[in-house]
Length: 218
Length: 218
Image (cartoon, rainbow over all chains, first blue to last red; front, top):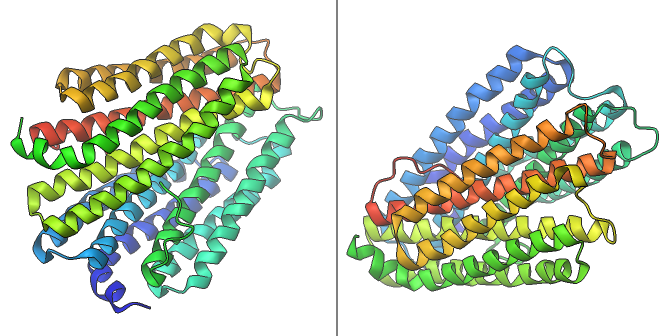
């Protein structure tokens, strides 16, 4: 591990970790609220997203201040620029958890997900929870095995996203049009959640190894 | 207009403008391909997105190099950091144009959008084209009236996105489940395109006026 990572990112690392913990709770609660049509929990996720946005704004300020004060050169700069990118992705993951909660609220007291798709959504929730938990752990430990685990979670989210199409487009699908719309959007939110998780994992890996290969754009 | 904007952003401005022009062509062609089930044009949009991603990677490198070479202080830094944010949003707009083309390709030789939703999608295409064209013009002229026009285009995209729900959830909807899924996803792509356009417009406004009020996060 490069020493530079430890020194520089510590200053923004705490903010990123705080954001990631909020997202971890947000996506877990959003999935629970979705599965149980829990209006109160959905409202809580929606309200909590403001906190993530506030930390992001503060963190971005801190990054710019850090750049100005330290006048850092190439490598250090990359750390801080990466910090800005990572915060944008984590913030977006918070938005997606909020979107899941918003669909739950919109359909209350009905359940948004019909019986036929519930198993897939339980698996989507599990994979998203794992990805969010692994991001928190990766920020804490810089253990690159976690980055590989996040890529695997994302692959599973992609497969489960595809499976929702197989379900809704099968002749056996008995869902209403509203349910088709909700399943389509909700699966897309989980799939995007995975994409952002991978982007975060790749950027953290880059900071640890200095190897930019495989870092996708935002 | 602050002189700093002219001096600093010129160095990244050309790259942003190049990206924005690609996106302008991409979303226009993606919408044309969608409306006419034009496979060749859809393929062209999908292939062209790689060029946008390549310019973004190069631009980001240039921003970091600029930071390292110039050791800029607060205001100048904000310009470059904003440049990084703007490039990420424009890149994402390119992805969304590609997603529209991918749905077109997947349904070929059928049209993805059924008759009942075509008028709404023609309006979505128009609003997205206006937003993309205005971003190119805003990057060229820094005329803040264009930023206001982009906010208005986005508002229209939001309304049209909502209208697709009214259409698919109406008792008159005769679309198949595949058509419901496609309409839901495609409308979402246009809606997100508008959100990113506003993010770009707000960040450019901030660079011109120095006023961060109303700049939303990514």
